[in-house]
Image (cartoon, rainbow, N blue to C red; front, side, top):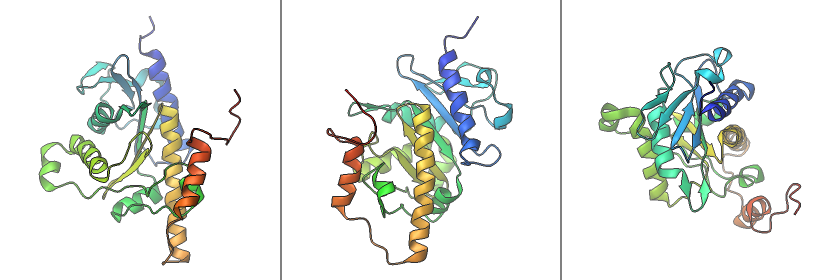
Length: 241
């Protein structure tokens, strides 16, 4: 008999296959989860299993207490981070978060290792978020020793609160010394935002290499590009009524 979580597991499975397809990680260096708000559970990649060996059946169902609901494999070691982010960010100002991705994609991880936010230099970046990509500080020694993965989620949430950022609009973050996380309305959107994050990280690095004194894009251009895709009168694409 098919699992009641079959659709969720298939969404997570398909999204995880996009990590190698989009060149976002080597080996097993990444994971995606898919969240069902109604059931208060998410499906996530099993820990340490190569993408080529994944199946929809191998996805692990976890609840918001971090307990395995269904599955025979250990979930991703980053599962506690996903738990915190879903508990804190899943519904924010009416925008739902239904998927999270974490990778060690090269360019984004480079900025994270430098513990630097990615400046908003160009319109590609502005098409997706209206701020620099935030970067948290390092986790404290006490937090690492207490509960590393859970505290990583807590650090992201705390950093967003300190900066006054809306996770429904700022859909990506760097964890200092670690790497990128991104999220979206579903698992596929999370992968999309993870891929966007990697590309704008590359573009920003190139920008600084060409002009170390490069300045952020003026607000009026940022606002124009963001609002034409996301504003109440958005006109990008084929949104026909």
